[in-house]
Length: 330
Image (cartoon, rainbow, N blue to C red; front, side):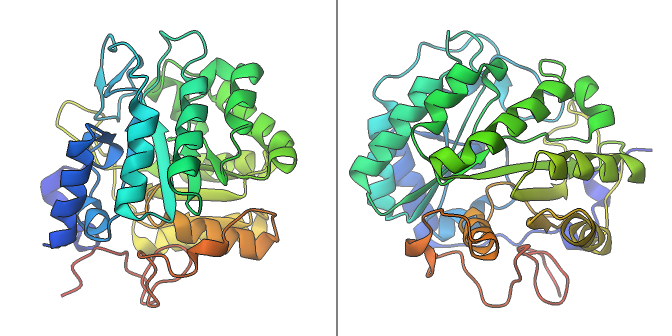
């Protein structure tokens, strides 16, 4: 039986935070005609993140060539690539004063390289505009083509991320345009190349799409074998009634258990798990924590005072009393 939005448990009730900074971020993004996954994917953290002057840039347009059953981003025929977009992303990063920028994209199967060169140009533009800013890429799979992945790796982001999104058993039904096997192969290739380029490898998936306990464990085992440096696990929230329905709401205690199993039993350096955990949420803290814990040669020196850092949260983004951030705990 699916769980509707009206039956959401209290730990999923995000607070809306009014903030002048939130409006300023929106104005800067609009002035540069930029898209964010915060808006396009209906992220529950948009008020908090915009209020802290952070955002996740969505490049290469707002129309995807693939149709995943959970995703709020529009599907169709994309517009031609905006060659000036990398410069505008760099300018926005500078104006926002970001020390850590996350860049993701729609899938662009219409482009010969899937947009790999555009990703690389965007990283270069951010470096030129804001040299101290660290960069995380949440990339598409580029159809598994090593040459296109190398184009992105050569840009030297601090973190290369590619999300599985759902557990292995359900993956191909929920994401029909990309196979689970190819997704793991992309991550494994990134893991083999990370030492040469100096980045962390990151992936993540959601609970609440019909998975069983053995599915979750098997997927964590697959990510441990990659091996991934960072894994995020969050709760799936259907963006509209026409999307894949929510099967269940996993309790905070279950997320804590999977974090423990992933790190202690399987040896994944860092598992960030919680009902409202998202791949890009507190991404800077995830990178700092992982680099510190693993000793990876990743530049995180400028991030000690990240605007999203909060002493009352642990490495998973959870409050110390076990409830997720942005949750009404009255």
